Image 1 (tube, rainbow, N blue to C red):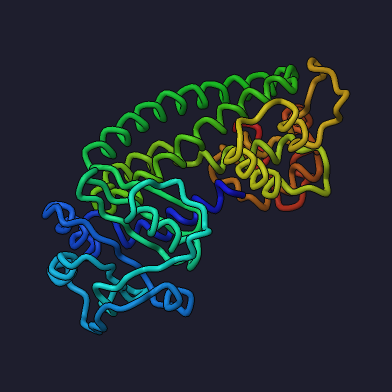
Image 2: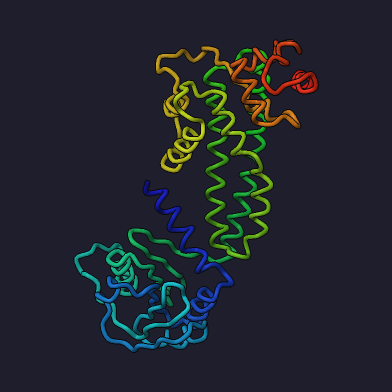
Length: 342
């Protein structure tokens, strides 16, 4: 849950601070000038409790005004929508009993205010030349754009390699399905490959959020590489989840949450597939055929559902005659031939 909460924090905070946004432009100006500062986003009742002194501004926000006001020692408070500068040169007095791992006075204050008020607090350090974000228990240090681009490009290269391995694993699994040689180990290996690809995807999405408009090229590459990966993973689970009362969509959702928290082992995967704990490693598993039949062009999902409901396994579909296929609701001679050729 902590990882999911951090993901939510990143997705909600970064759009305000991505390169090219008015807030980021103003903060970068403060950083380049070497003056440092504290910025609080939102003026809630909780924030009021920690504010002392300062000047009420109530002026429209602009990067240049933020830069000028940061020359004063106190903190700046902006409206939640970043449209107004509400207060400047205020002193923040959070509860000193709130724990903080920071050593500098500005960053310690920022962390305590964020924990006490749940507001987004931005600390700009002139000495370390960094921008640190605090909200609740979360903390994130913004990186230089060149560093992020380098890491994003490295992640794209890693993703390309993982995707190639996943594609080959899917192909091998399809061959084993027709040979009736699929074991739990074969399915588990493919799910591990899916997990690796999705882990790199999550890392790249963080970089894309932080890059803002500069991350469009990375986004295009990511979308191109991951086209249909999640769909294929969902269909794979539909093929092998044993328990009829558990939907593949829920199993896939649980798989992603578990993968956020730690690397998956075979026991977790066995649980997601609802396989018996005492099943032998070499026990043959039978695919229902969702993944391979979705690759047949011009075959609607509703017809695929009818076929699988009628035959139950891919092997049974493979061995069915044209007359058998025509017995399925919604399939005539043309579609029966399409399935056999597919």
